[in-house]
Image (cartoon, rainbow, N blue to C red; front, side):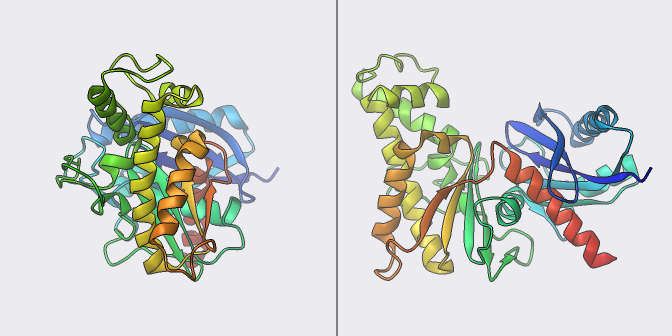
Length: 325
Protein backbone atom coordinates (compact mmCIF):
# COMPACT_ATOMS: atom_id res chain seq x y z
CA UNK A 1 0.00 0.00 0.00
CA UNK A 2 1.33 3.44 -0.93
CA UNK A 3 2.19 5.62 2.01
CA UNK A 4 0.72 9.09 2.49
CA UNK A 5 3.33 11.84 2.66
CA UNK A 6 3.01 14.13 5.67
CA UNK A 7 4.84 17.27 6.74
CA UNK A 8 5.30 18.25 10.38
CA UNK A 9 4.10 21.85 10.75
CA UNK A 10 5.55 23.50 13.86
CA UNK A 11 4.69 26.87 15.43
CA UNK A 12 7.17 27.86 18.17
CA UNK A 13 5.54 30.54 20.30
CA UNK A 14 6.88 32.35 23.33
CA UNK A 15 4.71 30.26 25.66
CA UNK A 16 3.51 27.22 23.70
CA UNK A 17 4.86 25.24 20.76
CA UNK A 18 2.12 23.69 18.61
CA UNK A 19 2.71 21.04 15.97
CA UNK A 20 0.71 18.88 13.61
CA UNK A 21 1.03 16.35 10.82
CA UNK A 22 -0.30 17.82 7.56
CA UNK A 23 -1.17 16.01 4.33
CA UNK A 24 -1.00 17.42 0.77
CA UNK A 25 -4.59 18.68 0.95
CA UNK A 26 -3.94 20.69 4.11
CA UNK A 27 -5.71 18.29 6.44
CA UNK A 28 -4.31 18.10 9.96
CA UNK A 29 -4.02 14.36 10.55
CA UNK A 30 -2.89 14.70 14.16
CA UNK A 31 -1.77 17.56 16.38
CA UNK A 32 -0.42 18.33 19.82
CA UNK A 33 1.48 20.99 21.75
CA UNK A 34 4.13 21.38 24.42
CA UNK A 35 5.20 24.28 26.62
CA UNK A 36 7.99 26.19 24.90
CA UNK A 37 11.11 25.15 26.76
CA UNK A 38 12.95 28.43 26.46
CA UNK A 39 14.85 27.75 29.68
CA UNK A 40 16.82 24.79 28.31
CA UNK A 41 19.37 24.60 25.53
CA UNK A 42 17.84 24.77 22.03
CA UNK A 43 19.37 21.44 21.05
CA UNK A 44 17.68 19.65 23.96
CA UNK A 45 14.36 21.36 23.23
CA UNK A 46 14.54 20.28 19.57
CA UNK A 47 15.28 16.71 20.72
CA UNK A 48 12.23 16.71 22.99
CA UNK A 49 10.03 18.21 20.27
CA UNK A 50 11.30 15.75 17.66
CA UNK A 51 10.51 12.82 19.97
CA UNK A 52 6.95 14.12 20.44
CA UNK A 53 6.47 14.49 16.69
CA UNK A 54 7.73 10.97 16.01
CA UNK A 55 5.44 9.60 18.72
CA UNK A 56 2.57 11.39 16.96
CA UNK A 57 3.61 9.75 13.70
CA UNK A 58 3.57 6.30 15.29
CA UNK A 59 0.14 6.84 16.81
CA UNK A 60 -1.39 8.28 13.62
CA UNK A 61 -1.03 5.41 11.14
CA UNK A 62 1.51 2.97 9.70
CA UNK A 63 0.53 4.15 6.20
CA UNK A 64 2.03 7.62 6.74
CA UNK A 65 5.53 8.78 5.85
CA UNK A 66 7.17 11.94 7.17
CA UNK A 67 8.75 14.10 4.44
CA UNK A 68 10.17 16.93 6.52
CA UNK A 69 9.57 19.84 8.88
CA UNK A 70 8.09 23.29 8.32
CA UNK A 71 8.88 25.47 11.33
CA UNK A 72 7.64 28.94 12.22
CA UNK A 73 9.50 30.87 14.92
CA UNK A 74 10.04 34.49 15.87
CA UNK A 75 13.31 35.93 14.62
CA UNK A 76 13.70 33.24 11.96
CA UNK A 77 15.58 33.72 8.70
CA UNK A 78 14.13 31.46 6.00
CA UNK A 79 17.25 31.94 3.87
CA UNK A 80 19.60 30.48 6.48
CA UNK A 81 17.38 28.27 8.65
CA UNK A 82 18.63 30.16 11.69
CA UNK A 83 16.81 32.05 14.43
CA UNK A 84 18.86 34.72 16.14
CA UNK A 85 18.25 36.20 19.61
CA UNK A 86 14.47 35.53 19.59
CA UNK A 87 13.04 38.27 21.84
CA UNK A 88 10.50 36.07 23.64
CA UNK A 89 12.76 33.09 24.28
CA UNK A 90 15.80 32.82 26.52
CA UNK A 91 17.91 31.41 23.66
CA UNK A 92 20.80 33.69 22.78
CA UNK A 93 22.87 34.02 19.66
CA UNK A 94 22.30 32.09 16.46
CA UNK A 95 20.30 28.85 16.71
CA UNK A 96 20.55 26.68 13.54
CA UNK A 97 17.03 25.34 13.93
CA UNK A 98 16.72 23.77 10.48
CA UNK A 99 19.99 21.88 10.72
CA UNK A 100 19.15 20.65 14.23
CA UNK A 101 16.01 18.97 12.90
CA UNK A 102 17.79 17.64 9.84
CA UNK A 103 20.65 16.16 11.85
CA UNK A 104 18.17 14.28 14.03
CA UNK A 105 15.94 13.01 11.26
CA UNK A 106 17.91 13.03 8.02
CA UNK A 107 14.97 14.95 6.54
CA UNK A 108 14.83 18.49 5.14
CA UNK A 109 13.55 21.33 7.30
CA UNK A 110 12.39 24.86 6.50
CA UNK A 111 12.45 27.61 9.11
CA UNK A 112 10.44 30.79 8.58
CA UNK A 113 9.16 33.71 10.61
CA UNK A 114 6.12 32.60 12.61
CA UNK A 115 3.97 35.45 11.32
CA UNK A 116 4.90 34.59 7.73
CA UNK A 117 3.80 31.03 8.45
CA UNK A 118 0.47 32.35 9.75
CA UNK A 119 0.10 34.50 6.60
CA UNK A 120 0.69 31.45 4.40
CA UNK A 121 -1.90 29.51 6.39
CA UNK A 122 -4.50 32.25 5.97
CA UNK A 123 -3.70 32.62 2.25
CA UNK A 124 -3.99 28.92 1.51
CA UNK A 125 -6.69 27.79 3.92
CA UNK A 126 -8.16 30.69 5.90
CA UNK A 127 -9.53 34.23 5.79
CA UNK A 128 -7.18 35.44 3.01
CA UNK A 129 -8.07 32.91 0.34
CA UNK A 130 -8.33 34.65 -3.06
CA UNK A 131 -6.55 37.74 -1.64
CA UNK A 132 -3.30 39.07 -3.10
CA UNK A 133 -2.69 42.00 -0.73
CA UNK A 134 -3.11 41.55 3.02
CA UNK A 135 -1.29 41.41 6.33
CA UNK A 136 -1.65 39.01 9.24
CA UNK A 137 -0.92 40.45 12.69
CA UNK A 138 -0.07 37.74 15.20
CA UNK A 139 -0.91 38.61 18.81
CA UNK A 140 0.53 36.42 21.52
CA UNK A 141 3.52 36.67 23.86
CA UNK A 142 4.82 39.08 21.23
CA UNK A 143 3.52 40.82 18.10
CA UNK A 144 4.47 39.89 14.56
CA UNK A 145 3.23 40.45 11.04
CA UNK A 146 3.23 38.57 7.79
CA UNK A 147 2.81 40.92 4.84
CA UNK A 148 1.62 39.69 1.44
CA UNK A 149 1.89 41.92 -1.62
CA UNK A 150 0.97 40.72 -5.10
CA UNK A 151 0.43 37.25 -3.68
CA UNK A 152 3.98 36.99 -2.29
CA UNK A 153 5.11 36.99 1.33
CA UNK A 154 7.62 39.79 1.85
CA UNK A 155 10.76 38.51 3.61
CA UNK A 156 13.46 41.13 3.03
CA UNK A 157 17.22 40.78 2.74
CA UNK A 158 17.72 39.00 6.08
CA UNK A 159 14.28 37.42 6.41
CA UNK A 160 13.28 40.07 8.97
CA UNK A 161 10.59 41.94 7.02
CA UNK A 162 7.43 42.14 9.09
CA UNK A 163 8.96 42.74 12.54
CA UNK A 164 5.88 44.84 13.28
CA UNK A 165 6.05 44.28 17.03
CA UNK A 166 9.38 46.11 17.21
CA UNK A 167 8.20 49.33 15.62
CA UNK A 168 7.70 52.17 18.09
CA UNK A 169 4.28 52.38 19.74
CA UNK A 170 2.69 55.77 19.11
CA UNK A 171 0.82 57.82 21.68
CA UNK A 172 2.26 56.09 24.73
CA UNK A 173 3.41 57.72 27.95
CA UNK A 174 6.57 56.20 29.35
CA UNK A 175 8.55 53.55 27.55
CA UNK A 176 8.32 49.86 28.38
CA UNK A 177 11.48 47.80 27.94
CA UNK A 178 11.15 45.11 25.26
CA UNK A 179 12.79 41.69 25.17
CA UNK A 180 14.67 42.81 22.04
CA UNK A 181 16.53 45.40 24.14
CA UNK A 182 14.72 48.50 22.87
CA UNK A 183 12.22 50.70 24.68
CA UNK A 184 8.65 51.42 23.61
CA UNK A 185 8.21 48.61 21.10
CA UNK A 186 4.65 48.02 19.95
CA UNK A 187 4.52 44.53 21.45
CA UNK A 188 5.20 45.85 24.94
CA UNK A 189 1.78 47.51 24.76
CA UNK A 190 -0.33 45.32 22.45
CA UNK A 191 0.79 41.73 23.07
CA UNK A 192 -1.05 39.66 25.68
CA UNK A 193 1.50 40.55 28.38
CA UNK A 194 1.25 44.19 27.30
CA UNK A 195 -2.54 44.16 27.61
CA UNK A 196 -2.36 42.60 31.08
CA UNK A 197 0.27 45.13 32.20
CA UNK A 198 -2.03 47.94 31.06
CA UNK A 199 -4.86 46.42 33.11
CA UNK A 200 -2.63 46.25 36.18
CA UNK A 201 -1.57 49.87 35.70
CA UNK A 202 -5.22 50.90 35.46
CA UNK A 203 -5.97 49.02 38.66
CA UNK A 204 -3.15 50.84 40.41
CA UNK A 205 -4.42 54.17 39.10
CA UNK A 206 -8.06 53.63 40.08
CA UNK A 207 -7.59 51.67 43.30
CA UNK A 208 -10.52 49.43 42.38
CA UNK A 209 -11.58 46.88 39.79
CA UNK A 210 -14.58 48.74 38.51
CA UNK A 211 -17.90 46.93 38.50
CA UNK A 212 -17.14 43.22 38.24
CA UNK A 213 -14.91 42.57 41.23
CA UNK A 214 -13.01 40.02 39.13
CA UNK A 215 -9.91 42.19 38.89
CA UNK A 216 -9.32 42.74 42.58
CA UNK A 217 -5.91 41.05 42.61
CA UNK A 218 -2.72 41.56 40.62
CA UNK A 219 -2.91 38.05 39.15
CA UNK A 220 -4.80 38.90 35.96
CA UNK A 221 -5.08 36.47 33.04
CA UNK A 222 -6.40 37.08 29.54
CA UNK A 223 -9.48 34.97 30.24
CA UNK A 224 -10.18 36.81 33.50
CA UNK A 225 -9.88 40.16 31.76
CA UNK A 226 -12.31 39.08 29.04
CA UNK A 227 -14.83 37.80 31.58
CA UNK A 228 -14.57 41.11 33.41
CA UNK A 229 -15.22 43.00 30.16
CA UNK A 230 -18.37 40.92 29.62
CA UNK A 231 -19.53 42.14 33.05
CA UNK A 232 -18.88 45.72 31.90
CA UNK A 233 -15.89 46.16 34.20
CA UNK A 234 -14.56 49.63 33.49
CA UNK A 235 -10.90 48.67 33.99
CA UNK A 236 -11.15 45.71 31.62
CA UNK A 237 -12.93 47.70 28.91
CA UNK A 238 -10.45 50.57 29.22
CA UNK A 239 -7.50 48.16 28.99
CA UNK A 240 -8.86 46.78 25.72
CA UNK A 241 -9.62 50.30 24.47
CA UNK A 242 -6.11 51.58 25.12
CA UNK A 243 -4.52 48.46 23.67
CA UNK A 244 -6.76 48.50 20.60
CA UNK A 245 -6.13 52.19 19.98
CA UNK A 246 -2.35 51.75 20.02
CA UNK A 247 -2.59 48.67 17.79
CA UNK A 248 -5.02 50.32 15.35
CA UNK A 249 -2.76 53.36 15.00
CA UNK A 250 0.18 51.12 14.14
CA UNK A 251 -1.91 49.10 11.69
CA UNK A 252 -2.90 52.32 9.90
CA UNK A 253 0.80 53.08 9.37
CA UNK A 254 1.33 49.58 7.98
CA UNK A 255 -1.71 49.94 5.71
CA UNK A 256 -0.47 53.27 4.36
CA UNK A 257 2.71 51.53 3.20
CA UNK A 258 1.18 48.30 1.85
CA UNK A 259 -2.43 49.29 0.88
CA UNK A 260 -3.94 45.87 1.73
CA UNK A 261 -7.35 44.39 1.02
CA UNK A 262 -7.56 43.24 4.62
CA UNK A 263 -5.80 43.10 7.96
CA UNK A 264 -6.23 39.75 9.73
CA UNK A 265 -5.74 39.50 13.48
CA UNK A 266 -4.52 36.13 14.70
CA UNK A 267 -4.18 34.88 18.29
CA UNK A 268 -6.14 34.20 21.45
CA UNK A 269 -6.68 37.87 22.25
CA UNK A 270 -9.02 38.13 19.26
CA UNK A 271 -11.56 36.12 21.28
CA UNK A 272 -12.31 39.41 23.03
CA UNK A 273 -14.33 40.35 19.93
CA UNK A 274 -15.74 43.87 19.92
CA UNK A 275 -13.79 44.94 22.98
CA UNK A 276 -10.60 44.69 20.91
CA UNK A 277 -11.81 45.02 17.33
CA UNK A 278 -13.89 48.19 17.80
CA UNK A 279 -11.04 50.39 19.09
CA UNK A 280 -8.61 48.86 16.57
CA UNK A 281 -10.96 49.66 13.69
CA UNK A 282 -11.67 53.19 14.96
CA UNK A 283 -7.98 54.04 15.33
CA UNK A 284 -7.05 52.37 12.06
CA UNK A 285 -9.64 54.30 10.04
CA UNK A 286 -8.64 57.52 11.75
CA UNK A 287 -5.09 57.08 10.46
CA UNK A 288 -5.92 56.05 6.88
CA UNK A 289 -6.29 58.13 3.76
CA UNK A 290 -9.86 59.02 2.87
CA UNK A 291 -9.88 56.61 -0.07
CA UNK A 292 -8.89 53.74 2.21
CA UNK A 293 -11.38 54.30 5.02
CA UNK A 294 -14.06 51.65 5.04
CA UNK A 295 -12.27 49.80 2.24
CA UNK A 296 -9.78 47.77 4.30
CA UNK A 297 -11.41 44.88 6.11
CA UNK A 298 -10.40 44.00 9.67
CA UNK A 299 -10.87 40.27 10.12
CA UNK A 300 -10.27 37.55 12.66
CA UNK A 301 -8.31 34.49 11.57
CA UNK A 302 -10.30 32.10 9.43
CA UNK A 303 -8.67 29.12 11.13
CA UNK A 304 -9.19 27.76 14.60
CA UNK A 305 -6.62 28.10 17.36
CA UNK A 306 -3.04 27.66 16.18
CA UNK A 307 -3.96 26.09 12.83
CA UNK A 308 -2.77 29.00 10.69
CA UNK A 309 0.79 28.73 11.97
CA UNK A 310 1.23 24.99 11.59
CA UNK A 311 -0.64 24.80 8.27
CA UNK A 312 1.31 27.73 6.88
CA UNK A 313 4.70 26.36 7.94
CA UNK A 314 3.86 23.02 6.29
CA UNK A 315 2.64 24.68 3.08
CA UNK A 316 5.80 26.81 2.82
CA UNK A 317 7.90 23.67 3.25
CA UNK A 318 6.03 21.93 0.41
CA UNK A 319 6.40 25.00 -1.82
CA UNK A 320 10.17 25.06 -1.26
CA UNK A 321 10.47 21.34 -1.99
CA UNK A 322 8.58 21.84 -5.26
CA UNK A 323 10.97 24.64 -6.28
CA UNK A 324 13.98 22.43 -5.58
CA UNK A 325 12.57 19.39 -7.41
